[in-house]
Length: 280
Image (cartoon, rainbow, N blue to C red; front, side):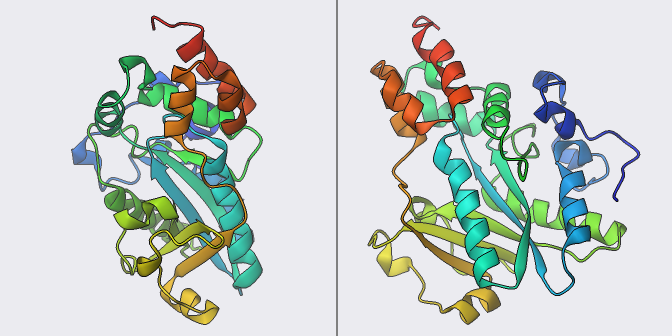
């Protein structure tokens, strides 16, 4: 078993035992100080899964990032779809799934440009809602490295840094390093370059039969996918759930639509924030 001398606040925060607001921000000067920033990342469970991973399988960590304003069911479903596809088709085991909420600096500008102020959820609120959404998904956890930074940092840097962090942890514990894989839906394909950065994987999920961004969808068979660490995943699942549609539903007081798109506990909190308090 892997144990740490210092408590990992994320493990406590997920149970609701710690007020998220007391988890400190980190400054740019701390970027490379992994020991100092370990409290931001749910490391313990992932390292224990890497330790148990069969030696003939590659351990994989999936990571998504975004505003999560608010989190919805497809954010979670994407991780479940990707895990099943990768484990069913490749000699790999998904040892961790991480959600990384974007910094307030980015999210506030994005949301308040098109919506009333009340539809912007600050980082602490978004983190709490994500914890509620993940309550029944113990293998999907939240990484606070991005949300708790002193300023906005680019998605590419977040993923590269998380890759370096887990390589550092595994080296320290004499474990095989995992392959960190960026997980995105096809609506985000236009925002990401192909192929992915060296040493990092890319998993793309699109609805089966969709032609969106077809010209940029690489044609790779399974062997090429594995060799290039690019996983092309088609699904019958509905991908049209979005945070934008949730905000629009709330603006129209359409509680039924809102409840369809977000986990039950998240819906309860959003109704309190956005509908029961119209002047908020």
